[in-house]
Length: 639
Image 1 (cartoon, rainbow, N blue to C red):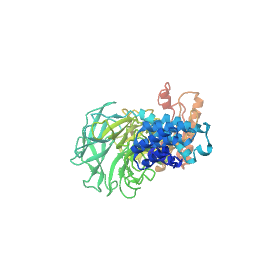
Image 2 (image 1 turned 45 degrees about the vertical axis):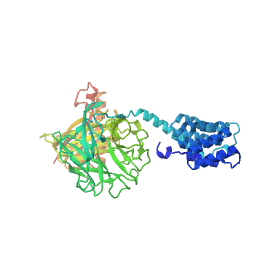
Image 3 (image 1 turned 180 degrees about the vertical axis):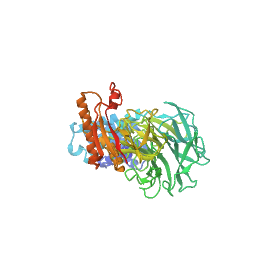
Image 4 (image 1 turned 90 degrees about the horizontal axis):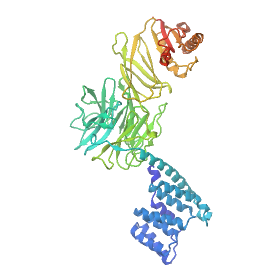
């Protein structure tokens, strides 16, 4: 539970003791012992108070209020055995007073004895049925009733967290990664083959690399090859791996630049990391800028900054790379950032799950890990604490989740390590997992010359109509999520566009989807298959997912006002030839109708159905029949 739910003190019980008349003011010997114990308890002289209340109980062993005071005293002393026995005796000698059950249950809860606390709450509910119950003096007031309701919810949540903690399987990364020095800021490129982190030795920070041997073993770590490590400090790295380039983004402090700490990057060339390069004034400010996280496609950067214009302290900021240039960073807003510090962001490869550390949101320790998710409208959810067990009262920093969403990695000073801060890994609970990803690795070529050319590349999630990636490039790496349906379009002025469809079934990082988009200059009789036109089985009404591709066709017709095209429908040979002919004609007409509705003249369009007469593949297999069912676009005229 977070602090606001878990913090109870013996002071609550102390207030209850005072209000329910334990101190009667009587002059008998037993009452004097009680008054003496109460006075010493108020003065925090707990050992003396314990001696006095023991005398009071010996003098009057059936007075429940004495046991209530004894419970409060021994709770304050940290003597849970005596406190629990005292709570039990309170109920034994006054089973009808409802509030007694709440104090007993709340103490059990603080001791993490959730099942026992739940049983005592049942006693609270049953108190009105006990002998001698008097509603006027024994019933719980509204304040206690509200506290009991909160305690019920807290017990339920704590039980859930206990199950989660038992399933985390937190493991030290071992001597290949950790040493007697400090290791922190873990991370990997999307392919998961290299483990990158920072090591601090005698006040000197450098990057270290370890390479994957198998699913459970990493090689002995070595300093990053090349020139990225210097005699000064380098830290908080994030690695981008592209189709033909790798970049390391990191923080450098007090070594020139625009502020006290700036964001830099280094390029990998011939297995060597090159000299560091400042990311420039669009990203860096005159303030502290640090802890970069680069997205899987290399076009989104999330980092921490103390620059003006935030919510206070250190905030999280986001910038996007468009056509090779970084935008001015934007603050992630008051739902994520607080007046305290938000730091150490990690944007997962799914592009919509963000982990970070915060001092401003309520948690268990100085820095706790939180997560937010982005919806299809681009709005971030409210931050969610990752829970007890993942978060502790110690320092836990640098949360990273692999591309498969199987393992999380973080640094911690928890006991049992090799010395200093160590890096740990664990299984991530399902509710905190991002979506596992694969990735699409692609290039764009001129079909005639086979040379790479820059083109407008767009990847769209057809289910949500969300543009996942858009840039003018000649090569690209785009994270994709298993189970989603994607349309990939590559286009360039003067060329007919390239259309692809991807529906990855599972995450297989070792085998990415690879594509070479080949663009051909527009010419007469040129044909392109429209791979993202969808119909229900044996139907001819366009499905919503088709509109993304058809809008690409609209654009190329708008850009080439003298172009005339044929839209052709094709089927497999399942069913009668007459039926297939009619179906292919109706499907082609549906496409034509959509283009006309978007403003394209009917004089520029011809629709035609060919039925099964022009197969692309065999009709003897399902894969072949799927290839034969298609819509094509043919250039009839171009000027």
